[in-house]
Amino acid sequence: MTDHLLSLMTFFPILGMVLLLFIPRDNHGLLKSFTLVVTLVTFFISLPLAFDDVFKTSAAFHYTEFARWISVGDYFQMNYNIGVDGISLWLVLLTTFIMPVTVLSTWKAVDKNVKGFMALMLLLETAMLGAFISLDLFLFYIFWELMLIPMYFMIGIWGGKNRIYAAVKFFIYTAVGSLLMLVAIIYVYYLSLQSGIAFENGFSILHFYRLDIPLDLQIWLFLAFAFSFAIKVPMFPVHTWLPDAHTEAPTAGSVILAAILLKMGTYGYLRFAMPLFPDATLKFIPFLSVLAVIGIIYGALVAMMQDDVKKLVAYSSVSHLGFVMLGLFALNLQGFSGGMIQMINHGISTGALFLIVGFIYERRHTRLIADFGGLAKQMPVFATIFMIVTFSSIGLPGTNGFVGEFLILMGAFESDLRWFAVIATTGVIFAAVYMLWMFQRVMFGELKNPANQKLQDLNAREVALMMPLLLFVFWIGLYPNTFFEKMNPALENMVQQIKVRQLAQGEVVDTLAHHEALLK
Image 1: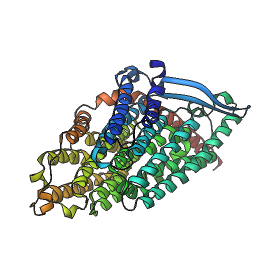
Image 2: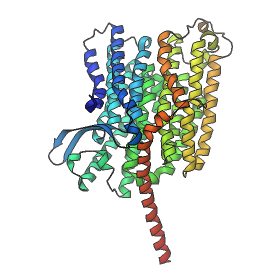
Image 3: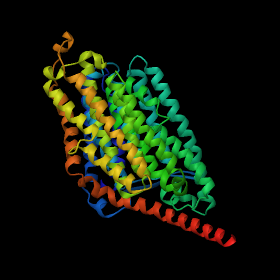
Image 4: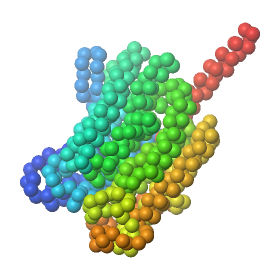
């Protein structure tokens, strides 16, 4: 089982989806229960990854599997090549952890075409896991594209009143970026053949890392990858699809989108764009850092102006993921570690916020802040959980958000992005403003509205699905070494790869400067 653990974990949801087709479509309880069992089994299959200490001492890929897949003469070879290292480890586990939580959140929220929704959930889980474990760039692209289909239908069929607009906008933005990345992938493969790398290696990123691509080509290839991943993050100014998609998506769709799908963009930068094109990365770091800081400030200010709770949380994602990108662009271990842990934190905290919004929407069928007030008196358990998640989102010390933001700012401050870190710190202040102001208006004040006076507090199912998220809020906040010790070896290796190219580029610059001085 260990030899094929990743394949079993990745494709078990597909097996569940096939079996789901034999359950009567009118038996909603059985459909949801079966899907919950499938996602729980997938989570338990992935658990050996969490307890394996090999990631603490090795930066290499583990649990690897390799098989020839598609061959066309001596020109095209695509392989089934998968594995995990400390970078992808926690994103894989976050995916298998979040999926049972999202299924539990559908118990009352999804009541039409339940079989179709559950089938799409399982298909989406396979696509997300496949993207995180792919070591063949073309295989990654297949899973990357596969993710679009279920999310498009989840928004377009089960979303709000503007669901078609939001679904089409989501699809067009992501598809345009994906096509540019496809062209770049094909060109990198062509360069690998030209450089003498055997075609049998296919689109292996481990071989692509060794390519010595001229700077002018790196710039164009990096731009294609970076644009595609920037849309997925999303970075300013290609972020406009996100608030619409989040606002119109069902609660489960919003949770998956925030917790997992947005991490595809940040993961793409760290795994592909930056190590494949290190010279171009160094060239574009100042420009991309500016966009990251603009995203931090812009997302926070726009979130502050929202009158819809869900849209406020959506814009907060633009701000939080701007911090992640700033950490990655610091190009040091502190920034990388902070960015990675903040990916996990955002999945937990923002996923929890969307669940909380879903709870009150199911009860009131409104998300307008003005329609609430005084809910803490009527729903004390809900208020307590909401408060903890709010503190997590704004980065209160002792919660997970503080660890990630502190390391990101420290990493940026110790690199050449010192002033970017200073400016980005205002985003932390703005986050406290918009989150606490929203919390105060929703939870405190007089309980005037008669509709709010009849609200029921969270039931056992809702409390049960929130408890694991709260556990990780405090676990990461109080003892993050559990996560750092397994991701740091791989991150150190990534930093070293880029630093070697940075030093080499510095030597070239010094040599040119020396020659210019001699000529003068």
